[in-house]
Image 1 (cartoon, rainbow, N blue to C red):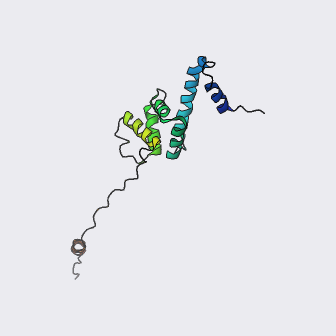
Image 2 (cartoon, one colour):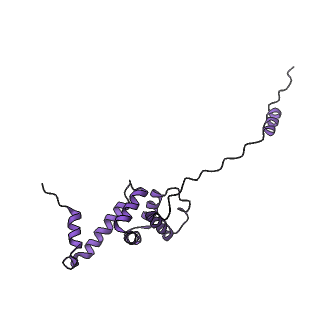
Image 3 (cartoon, rainbow, N blue to C red):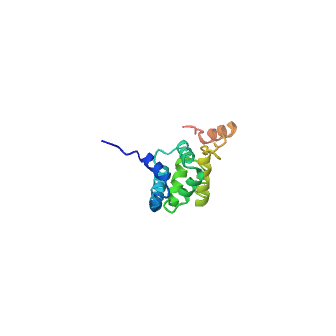
Length: 142
């Protein structure tokens, strides 16, 4: 069985835009869909996001991220996947989420570290002991 080398075919088509100009809109749809599917993959990591950005360029990635086929919920899901501890994720507008996604892709920022809640201060030993002795005092039995 002979397999088609899709990437080689697309590269050849891209090298001859006059010949394939009539299908440019179809190729754009296919290219956007392919990048969108790569971004929505369950195994997307920050490294993979940066590989995609290096391969297609950050301008093209920004185009796909701003394209009508990429829903706001898709952008939020991608940001959450590659930077799940970003404190602004739930409160920022979608344009700021897109900007953060592109910054992550370019390496302009790193994924956020998990925020650890501060521990409550321990009570002083004297207060604890005093509370213990008064609440647990025994009554004299007859």
